[in-house]
Amino acid sequence: MLNKEFEKKYDGVIRSIAIAEGGKDMSVGSDMLKYEIRVHAGRVTRQDTYQGIPEDFDWQQATEDLDSITD
Image (tube, rainbow, N blue to C red; front, side):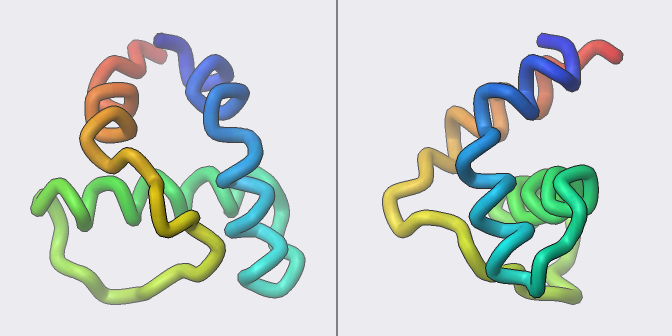
């Protein structure tokens, strides 16, 4: 999966994070989502918490998608 495909797939979540975090840029929202995915996968220690991620977010699928980014 290309990074732009990841961002397209998770566009709604990225927008939600960007808005919830005070109107951040979409690229910042994308980085925030990727960070949250890594935290939930146990790959990094939580240092920040970002709002706007849906309660029913599929963390396992998102981790697989993030791992598949090739660019």
